[in-house]
Length: 135
Image (cartoon, rainbow, N blue to C red; front, top):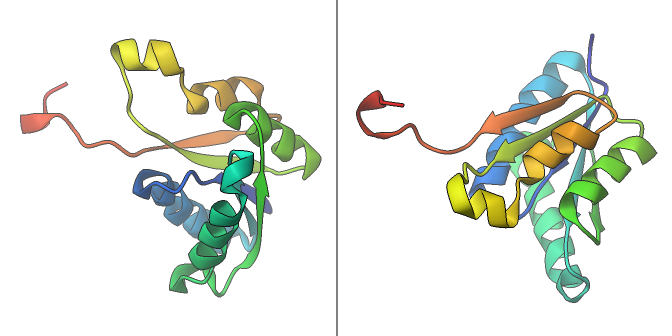
């Protein structure tokens, strides 16, 4: 099934941008479009909008059909709500690789999106393998 509308949440980190690279490959194969989403605090509005503008000007994205938006609120809730609103076919986001207590305290946006999104979700592994290839 080709994915025509792909939602890519970006938080400004290089790890999240890895998901965008993956989404570009999917969009090119399916001739789909990408919706970049930045969930930001109200006071970060201008910075978030400038980040998205600069991001979508990068070379890999110029030949694609793109839309970018800034929204406010809880990231997982906003991502799932935006996916429903825009009837997206796929959400592509990164896992920041948090484990243990950090994950328990802060939760996992990726995990919450997987549970609540109305469409398939691809989580791009964005943390390095452990040393010597071990578990």
